[in-house]
Image 1 (tube, one colour):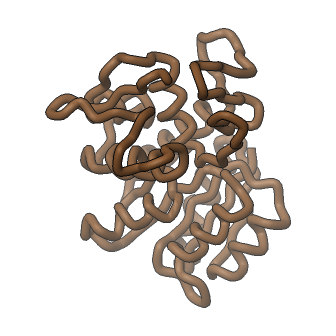
Image 2 (tube, rainbow, N blue to C red; image 1 turned 45 degrees about the vertical axis):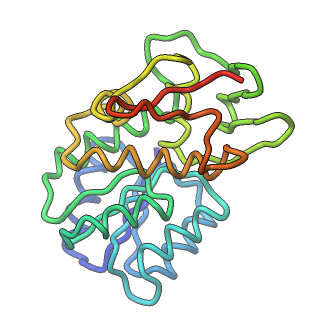
Length: 227
């Protein structure tokens, strides 16, 4: 697996690089947004650790531009503690975030969890597709099709819709979705789920204000409705 670490703190990058190389990762590094974008385009990257505050091009803009050509999983790093910075990172297409300072063991655990889900490893037999009414999931392309329209999703968006579609009609609380989809004791809050649901609705719903697929069960959580 190849990981791209993007941060202008060279000592921090050196430490993260060392730890992931010890785990067998190939590591690319960048110290500004322009360099990060070039590497993301030119190299075959499996996951990106991306700082929010970067020279030349800020992390949110980098994340947004990467999403124009790639669904590679992105973990945002931020030294800020305001909720809005974290939520904005998710809105721009990040799959996860961590607030500095962080525990390197937790970062490694999150990376491994994302990669495990992105590669589809697990106890379930390998699938190539799933069809439910008007909706089709392609596990090779990790895309969703609504009717004849193919839709690009981020890694976490795909994992979330996969869980909901695979268990159509079952209501999941936000806490359950965090535990199942993110795969660890998430240090953030349940609004992370709301952000991802909103993004999915904007992509797949004919009218996101009146969803027909991802339905809210008020006071409980979300479920997928077959159509």
